Structure formats: structure tokens, C-alpha cells
Length: 164
Image (cartoon, rainbow, N blue to C red; front, side):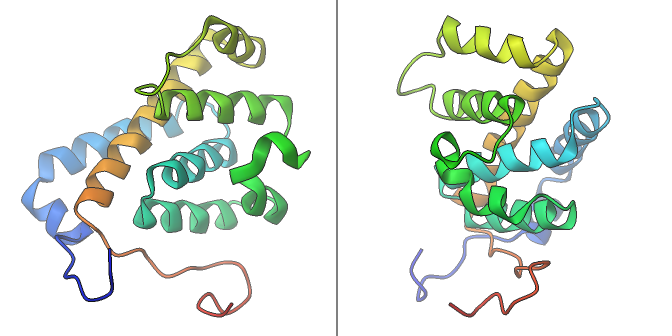
């Protein structure tokens, strides 16, 4: 979106226009939060999916959440290059690989080899919730990205968020 363009919608307008959708997505989010998956892990995958999908609103929202949860700054900074970064656990790498595969599955199929890698790091129940978390952030990316929600202010990193 260019600065001269008017935004198509915003979060409050969407919530007012489609309250059932907002409520259903909130219930899905609560089920994922209550699943036992580590919240810092789910925030990292939401950041990565939002990067891949180019959703500024969701990316900034989940960067703020990751900081609030105490995710290491190195992980936040390097999530786009997680394969080469050397700071992610095997479980985080499996989740990030699964995130990328599901987010980009229209380009190529999700392989059995990747599923085996995910199975080595997660239980069957955790895989179900991990998959649901990835589906949910991809849905939110499509809602917020296509409607051009303005990103929230950057928070929680102790420096001027607008400065370079």
C-alpha cells in the first residue's frame, strides 16, 4: 500500500461488520492458546507466516506479542532466516518449517519427509493445534492484509520504533 492510498478497513470496523467471524476466530485462538503449545513458539510461527504473506498488521501485532512474552530478540530478529540462524531449537525449526510449508502449499505439496520431521518434535495433538494455529494466522493475514488494516505501534523493544 502506498502512503497516498486510503485503507480499505480497520480492525474495529471489521469486528463491527463481521462480529461472528471475529468471535469465531477468537474462539479458535483460545483453543490454540489452551492446547498446551508454548505461546512463544506460536508467536514465532505467526511472525513467520505474516512475513511470508506480507501482512503488516499481523506482523507488527505478533512482533509486539513475541516481545511481551519474552521471546529472545535474536530469534525475533532472525526468524526470516531461521534455517541459517543457529538460534532456534529443533522443535522451533520443525514448527517454522511446517509453517512455511502450509503457508506456501499452493506452490508445492507438503512432503511426507517434512511431516516425519514434525512428528519427531510434536505429539499428534500438538500437530493438530500447530496446524490450526498456522491456518488461523493465514486466515488473519488474508483478512487484515487484503483490507489493509493499519499496523499497531511497535512496542516492547526499548528503542524508538520509528527510528532507523
